[in-house]
Structure formats: structure tokens, C-alpha cells
Image (tube, rainbow, N blue to C red; front, side, top):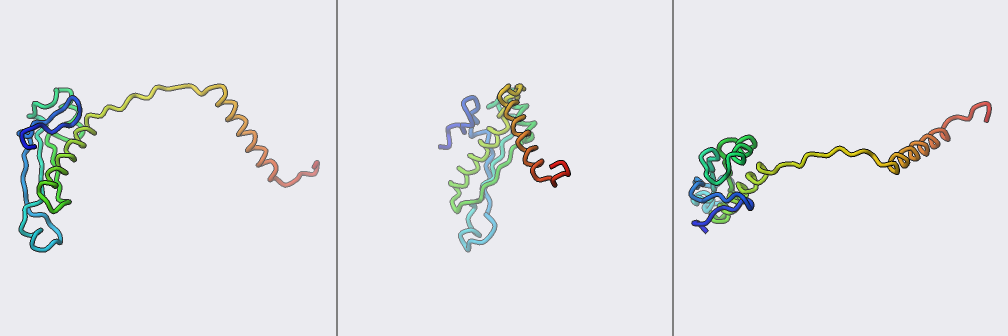
Length: 138
């Protein structure tokens, strides 16, 4: 597990040697285990110095999350599970930063949709006319 790359998507694989991992005691309740075990995982990845991404990808990631990506996991009691969680979160953040929204293409309403809209407006106007007080002519 430790010598392979962290797979983000088909084009991005972060070598684990580029990830700076540190462990510390997890805060909160939990008795002696939580107070004495270094289960909290902090994972850092320096985007600007990484060779795992192309210059265009690097620019997108730096614009979205900054030059250094930091992820913390202390959800579990196990250091190994927290490390896995931190790696998944880092991969998710990079994946989100690299995602490019497709530009919206403007479309015109169809004839049928225009007709349905006009009919709905006429029906609503008829309902409102029926609610009025009768006039002297009625």
C-alpha cells in the first residue's frame, strides 16, 4: 500500500513520497486510548512542487485550493483507517478542483412549450376572472 501511487483519476496519480504525513493525538472523549495514541492523521501535499500534475492541472488546483493542500482525519480510532480516510479526502478535493463544468448552450423554447405556456396563462386568468365580484352586466 505504501509504495504505490494515490490514484485521483485516470490522468492524475500522486506518488506517496510527495505526501507529507504527520500523526498526533486525537482530541475529544475516548479515555486512555484516545489520549495516548497518535491516531489523528494530517496529510499535506505541496501542489506547486508536485510532478504528478501537468502545468494546466496545477494551475486549476492552486486556483481552487491553494498551493498546499492539507487534509485532517481523526474520525476513527485506528491510525490506518484515518490515513485511508485522509487520502480519500485529498483525492476527492483534487478531483473536485480538476472538474471542469461544461458550458451551458443556450436553447430556444419550442413551439409546443410556448403554446403550453400560453394555455396555462389563459387558464390561470380564467380562474382569477371567476373569483371576481360579479359586475352589473352579469
